[in-house]
Image (cartoon, rainbow, N blue to C red):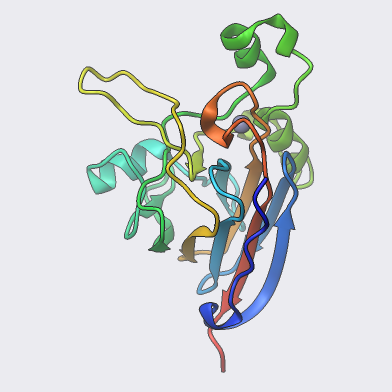
Length: 216
Ligand SMILES: [Zn+2]
């Protein structure tokens, strides 16, 4: 296992209002206020961060993978992507991206999909669905509120014939994305516990979330 990469304080602009390491396999949620920036850091590399966004003031408004792909006419998320809601509003904007490509098609893993893909012996394994349900419960939401999600740092190539792949990651220790909130946004993250495919390098590792706001 590689060492956790430190982040140079000089690399962080603005005033830090939250700095948290999400342990491997664990969920996290928090509200990023309009004008604040959420940095998600892949501390040890090749760690998928499954993520759903909600309007903090009205959670019925939430992230839409379809609206996001249509708005930018591209299926991958990268620098400049507007993360769109189901009501057609920009929720967050990717303002920095040291990786270059993230997935929003592959979905979140579940015990059920694990048993179909990898065999019934995986039924007991922890999955993103359980992480999301636990964390959504903190905000009086449940299964019906699990919508399309983002997979930060996950490599899901789409072949010319439309075939999806879940293949070896292209991320590396210290890679990060910055998300500027365009509305008060409840961000829910499942630090993906999947160990049956390469999305986490077969070794789930921590993610770090840092929220900053402009000084002054
Ligand atoms: Zn997962």
